Image 1 (tube, rainbow, N blue to C red):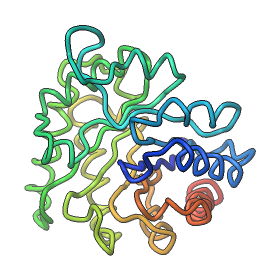
Image 2: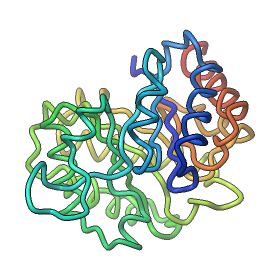
Image 3: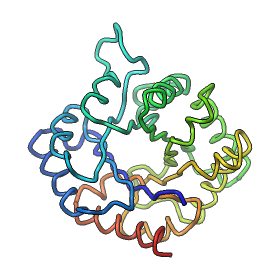
Length: 258
């Protein structure tokens, strides 16, 4: 059985040490002793270190919303994966739609970051998703296939099982409502099919696929009620620890309690 996942990114909404540490400490308190669901947070990069300190001893992992594609060297202004590892980080968010649209990240760059993250033993949370709603299944599958296979590139298949694929349809990010559940379920099936065809049924069964894009306590039950949806990647609806806890409890109920 694949372990369910509930992750959250704060983008650059929570940027001061006091606010960031207070928020993650509240998350840790409401999820005390919750070990069955994997949990991670991606704080604003400027407050990763104090968040790391605040989460020590908790069941919540943390990581970076972005890293340099290169481990070390003359790359002014970049965040090295060495720093994230040194702080105790275990996850890296890679290829978010905003990184691509605003900061012009290419799939080749996303590949370098994915490869580096896996080789250094961390978990890539690899964001994929179509720019507009594609009701034609074959068109949607082709877009996602290019993203997945280019991002993986020549990465050793044995490492790929550690990747968490975060399906985030660009047209649903930051909107009032998520993509409808039927569309999400169908897309997760397509994603697992892509991995199966490119690699193996065993790898496809092992890889976890989570949904992100306007996830809330009101839609999480329906979204996760499918075998191919292994959890969720929360945005602004999780800024309230009470909402986060409700979402977590629902995922646990759906995925582990039947």
